[in-house]
Amino acid sequence: MKCFRPHGVNGDTMELTVSASENINGTLILPLFEGSENVPEKCQNGMSSSMKNQINRVLSSGDFKAKKKSTMTLYGGEDGKAILVGLGKSDDCTIHDYRNAGATVTAAIKKSHGNEMTVRFDGAGISHMAAFAEGMMLRDYSYDEYKKNEDEEETEVSIRINCSEKEEEELVGQVNILKGICKGVHLSRDLGNCPPNDMYPEVFADMARDWAKDFDNVDVTIINYDEAIKAGMGGLVAVGKGSSRKPCMVIFEMNKDVKGKCPVLVGKGITFDTGGISLKPGANMDEMKYDMGGSATVFGTMEALAQTGYDGKVVGITCMAENMPAANATRPGDVIKGLSGKTIEILNTDAEGRLVLSDGLWKAAEYNPEYIIDFATLTGACVVALGHEATGLWSNNDEFRTRIHEAGNAVGELAWPMPLLPAFEKEMTDSKIADTRNLGAGRWGGANTAAAFLKQFVPNYDYDKDGEQIMWAHMDIAGTFWGAKSNLMVKNGATGVHVRTIYHLIANS
Ligand code: BES
Ligand code: ZN
Ligand code: ZN
Image (cartoon, protein in one colour):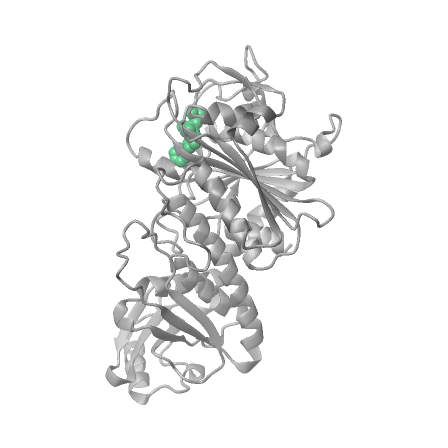
């Protein structure tokens, strides 16, 4: 098992600190607005006149226009180097532009820039400076576990963020929290990027158990295959039984002794999705190693909360299985019954995510949820609808859906509202021989019918038959968990999307 890097050692090479010192250590990183004609007054402290002249020359000549996402390196001989980075026009420059600029700098850093750098801002607010640091850290990731030459030492780069003495304490606080959150994002990416021969349900479970040993306030419970059968988790079992890597459910409980209701996060964790007997075509099937992205989001969010010392109660439930064709695999036509007691006619074994989630969602009500959010690389149809630019977002509560949408906007992770319509529910409960069917009647609206299916398995509060359904949202990350070329925070592979959204939703509201 090679794929796991314990937290703190993730694929990053940067050590970021905040300092009110006036010196420029190593290479200067200088974020600039469009239209700057010379080095801003505030940034000139400790700068040699030759460096200043050189920067002034490229600015006044228009050689560097400071457009968004642009960088330029200046080589100042003995006076060191500088990386200029564009923020765009000052009047429409948002916190997202600062985060993007930070990520752009990380992408531009080369060995020749040395291993010490200092960032100087021209009067940016504290949260803007923090966002720049966040972008730098998020982009500082590569998955090279299977490439690494053990003898080759990785060079550590130390980055110093300059600020005033007045700002120092608050900026240190914000950056420390962001460091913890980035660890969660990087963990989610590690889990997603790990090849499927090394990442299967039992490995995920072992990792969760090992990880929890480092935190007094987290408990991990594993429901193994035999226990899942005994418990009646028919959905999880139906999907995972055809694989020699048997399925399991992994439950994370943080601060479980805290009284009252809590968020419950549920993740689809298909460590490889061949489609099962309804076998997928061969092209790009390798990408189905990312089909555990929902479970990675849950685990990564737990890491972010744990690293930042969150003291509220939160529960995560991950439904882990490998979907394989086999002599003993589930067939199209089979009818199964899961935890909810409702029967499901399986018409396509490739619509497996909803089956494992049906048990995860039903289980969630045992943990006294304030709300449930599930994460899943659920449908190709969602990618057709939204491309790689936004996650599909459904909810049985309009206000809650808006809250999640806004939490995503706040951190630059788009989650787009999608409709949960009665007609779709009717379609998914219209089986001739069972309570529900796992496939829509036609091929249209496939992301919506999938969401409508899931809703059938969201319990009422306290499982009260006559009660109210638990507030719930579903996030289809099929297009956003990997493959988003426009996502500046990541070079390639898994994105770790929505760890930051959900951290923000839980910790800041
Ligand atoms: N894991 C896939 C969804 C998926 C496909 C995610 C492509 C990302 C990229 C899911 O299990 C699946 O196969 N869904 C089917 C559902 C269909 C059979 C109703 C799909 O989307 O085709
Ligand atoms: Zn599938
Ligand atoms: Zn799948």
